[in-house]
Length: 204
Image (cartoon, rainbow, N blue to C red):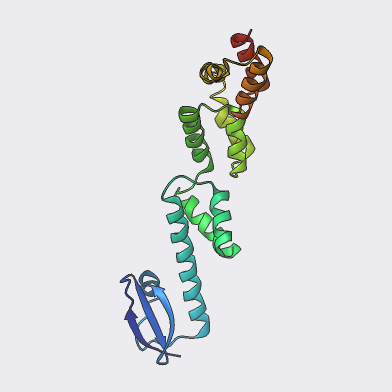
C-alpha cells in the first residue's frame, strides 16, 4: 500500500490521508508529522494501526484536557466521562497517566481546592464535604486529612448559619425549631455533637 495524496482539511490542524488513490482516514497534523507520513510512502497494515492508535490517544488526551479546562477534576470524574464517551480502557489509562505526569490532575490538590470553596462560599460542615469528595473519587484517607484542618472552626460556621436560619422559624415553637434547625444543620454536613451544641446555645 502506498500513500498517494495528503490534503488539508478545513481545520488546518488536520489532514486527509489517501492510500492507493482512495481516502483512508483523517489525522491530526501532529500525528502525521510524528510518523513522517508523506506522499509516495509505502505503508503496511501494522503501521496504519499504530498511526490510528496514536490518533485515538491524541483525541483522548485532547478530550480530557478540554474537560479539565473549566475547573479541577478528580481522576475518577475524568475516567467516568471518558468511559461514557466510549474510549476503551487502555486509551483511558494512558490518558490518566499523561495527565498525572504533567500534573493536570492531582486528587489531593482537587480536594484542597474543593474543600476551601465549600467552606468559604457555602459554610458546609466537614461531614458533608468529606462525603462529596469521596463521592467524586477522592481516596477516603486523603479526604479525611484535607477536611481535618477545617474542624477547629466547625462550631463557628454552624453558629453563623444557624443564627441566620433561626430567624425564619419565629412562628414555630421550641420543639419545631429544634427539629427544623437541627435537620438543616445536619443536611449542611455538621456532626451530631456540633449540631447539639449549636441548638443548646441558640434555642435554650
